[in-house]
Structures are given as C-alpha cells and as structure tokens.
Image 1 (cartoon, protein in one colour):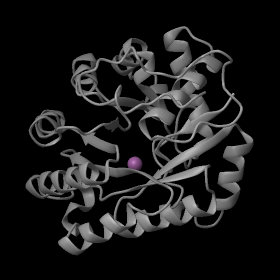
Image 2 (cartoon, protein in one colour):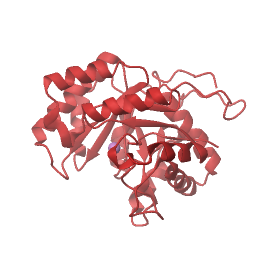
Image 3 (spheres, helix red, strand yellow):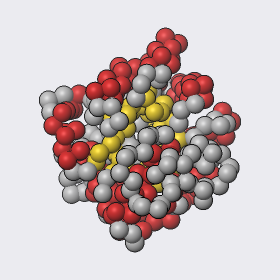
Image 4 (cartoon, protein in one colour):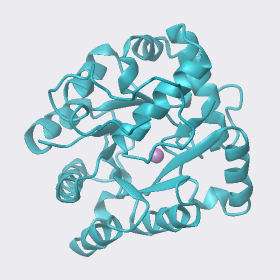
Length: 288
Ligand code: NI
C-alpha cells in the first residue's frame, strides 16, 4: 500500500536539520511520492531542487501564496514562469486567497491569483489552491478568469455546498490533518460524500499535524493518519483509499504511474467525472 502526500512543504526551514531523514522515513512508511509546493520564488526554487534530487519521488509546484501576494512583482512572475518549466514541476501552487489571516490586501491577493491562473493556463499545468474564508471570491474568480483550468482545493475545509462548487468546476478536494480532528463533523460529512475519483490526501506539513500528533511538527509519513480517517468515514479499507487517492493524484498532476500496477485489472480512467470542466479530459489513462 502506497500513498502520495499531495502537499508537503519539505523544502521549508522547519526541516533544515533533518530533511533527508524525514523524507527517508516517509518513503519507508509507504508514502512513496509527494508534491512540494512553493509559497514564493525562493521556496519554489527549493522545491525544484528537491524534485531534481529525488526524481520520480518528489515533484514540485511553483507559486506565490496569498500571504506573500505583495511579493509577486512582474519580475517574480517572470521568475515563476521560468521555474515552472524546469523538470519535476507538476503544478502552479500554492496560490489562492486567505481572508482569515489577511497578510496581504484582498485586492493584491486577487490580482496575484489571476496572474498565476494565466501562468497555469499558458503552461498547461494544474493549480493548487489555498482558500480560507474566501470561498465566494474564489469561486467567482474561477468562473470569471479560470476557464480551462483544473486543479486541487488543497486542505479543503468547508461544507457540502462549498465542495460541490469546487467539484462542479472540475476540481479535486484534498483532505489534510483537520479531517482527523473530532470537532470537524461537517468536514467528515464532505469526505464521506465526495466522489471517490475526486479526492486526495495531503499533510500540508510542517503545519496541520493530524491527531494524535497535534502540537508536534507535521511530516509526510503522517498522511497515513488522514487516509485512515478517510477510509473509516467512507467504510472502505485503507488499501482502497490508498489506491483511489494515488490514482487521482497521478491523474491531476500527470505523474508517471508507478511500475507495479496497484490493482490488477483496474484501469485508471476517471470516466465517472462529469465532462464539465477539466478533470476528465485532462486525466488520460496512464496505462496502469
Ligand atoms: Ni501549504
């Protein structure tokens, strides 16, 4: 059983002293691949360096986070454009809106997001979205400026109506540590309800550590705790969740399918997807 941590900031300074050991522990625990998003130009560059150090195991996303939206100058956007064409880059992210912490003005956040929509469209890459207390604006911008884009609502937090908005636009929902927090009943309902072919798991490490390690630094190997909770909520085995979320991650990020086929006879088309926006057409069968 193998899992993909679709959102692991292992390039960040919180892992400076033991990064190689954290990555090795993840691989040993069966988290055999991960996607490492940037939050600005520097951390995007560091993510690419890791992707090139661990080819086929770590993949990078390039982007400027809404907290840092004021740093996305024309020069930074040009730098992102160049970086996003490096080997090992599979997405533009993380990008988005955050009206909770409000570390950048909303107008600046929206402009940075739309600029990076353009980058994703030009380079034909999926987007990794951060969306906190900003759902109405996010959906409205995706509708007005996001035509043709596909991607992931990273660390999805919300109710079924919000999830439906994202799914209707062709996006995937990625669940993180908060799914394991007992008080998040509504989120559990979403995770139990969402289509099996549109869900992912992630840690968002070093943040959002799942139960029972809350308060400690998060690491990619703990993604198994979120996957286990997802399996409980859906009445599936952990192996079934691992197989489905792996296939979904391979589809949305266009990762090469791993050599040992996960389930004999299971072809990994995502045909139940609505033809609507992206997902379906952008997820060619990977031959596994
Ligand atoms: Ni993140």
